[in-house]
Length: 335
Ligand code: HEC
Ligand code: HEC
Ligand code: HEC
Ligand code: HEC
Image 1: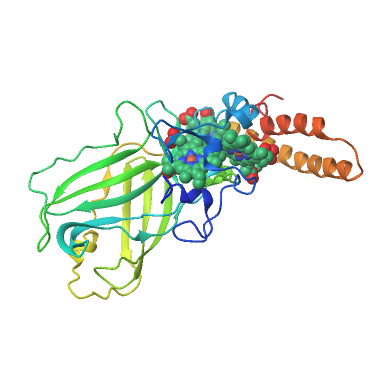
Image 2 (image 1 turned 60 degrees about the vertical axis):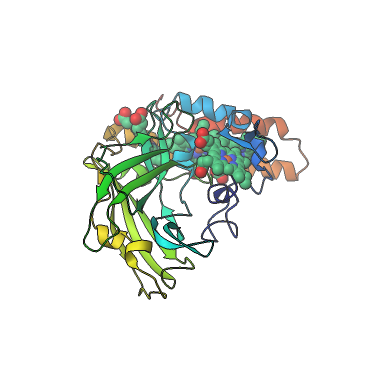
């Protein structure tokens, strides 16, 4: 629970790569189990499910009345993701012994911003998307268009795209390839801007990574794009951006099968953000902007009063509720 994804909560030197933002709750001294229930698995086991209601009930209520009632908190409040951006399974060594299924996974880097997809109940949630392939698969596996949910019972909202098996000249045929599509929830912070999601119905996320496994090749860098639009979901333009120097016994068909597989990382379906009515959008956007300015002034005023020795606790609570409702668009449309 702590590696990769939990790291995204702590950020900074704990994230992969180091230096990503920490979650806004870290400096408030919230720890994992303030949000995640501890489960029945014994020490160290925490439930994945978490909720925000205990502390942000006013925001949940406000959001439920807004045009974004089907948009998850993290969709607006998570801006950048880290950790794996690719995996390639092929020949290598595991525990010093030759093995055909060595996982070359240290392709780490930021992905920004997260792409939004609809979960099975129609809620827009942020996901991280990355390509994976595994060689030496004997059977032929057919592609499945769209998303396949990993947990049919709904225990998690993680999915994948089954791309099928591929054969390439000189490769570890066949390769089975898929896109991982995983729900993300940290790090929470300031929200994305309206334009960030609505300037275009097409979503695009930029990815850069650094490969630094101890086998295959010396460290090298690369990049790709994740695109989600009316015609589908795809990872494109995967490329190395520095020279690949093989290590002894290193082979691209093992640690970098994506170099051989080419433009296969795509599926069909409508993955665009719905186009909103321009008048409704402008009205809401300018309303929220005006109110945010007003509330910034209000915050300063409260601070000054507090500095003068006034007890502002009650006022602050009231103020926070009002502000949460306003910035989440609960009543901006009403004149
Ligand atoms: C502010 C509340 C909060 C805190 C604190 C928090 N999390 Fe989470 N975390 C969430 C929410 C919400 C989800 C999404 C739940 C779901 O998938 O249904 C989540 C999801 C996860 C996931 C799986 C999905 C993902 O984002 O990759 C992991 C793993 C995880 N948390 C680990 C941790 C660890 C480890 C810590 C402490 C270092 C931590 N969390 C702290 C709220 C929190
Ligand atoms: C134990 C209490 C607690 C829990 C649980 C909690 N938060 Fe918070 N959160 C706070 C406090 C306190 C602040 C800072 C004061 C504020 O802005 O309301 C905060 C601030 C925030 C901010 C403001 C970020 C910014 O700088 O603009 C966001 C977004 C947020 N929380 C989202 C969430 C989400 C989503 C969850 C559920 C996964 C969650 N919180 C769970 C206590 C909590
Ligand atoms: C449509 C986008 C959107 C969604 C969805 C959203 N927020 Fe926000 N939220 C904002 C904006 C915009 C602000 C203003 C400040 C900023 O930029 O972070 C904000 C501010 C906040 C703040 C800080 C308020 C303060 O007192 O300064 C908290 C806390 C917060 N959100 C929690 C949540 C929680 C919890 C959810 C889910 C129930 C949620 N938000 C869903 C856009 C969103
Ligand atoms: C994280 C991405 C994201 C951000 C940021 C965001 N939205 Fe949205 N918005 C969506 C999604 C997704 C929908 C579609 C919701 C649905 O399917 O119910 C939506 C729906 C809407 C709609 C309703 C569409 C219609 O015509 O019925 C309006 C209006 C809107 N957003 C305005 C805004 C404004 C104004 C802001 C800034 C305050 C904003 N949005 C910020 C993702 C976002």
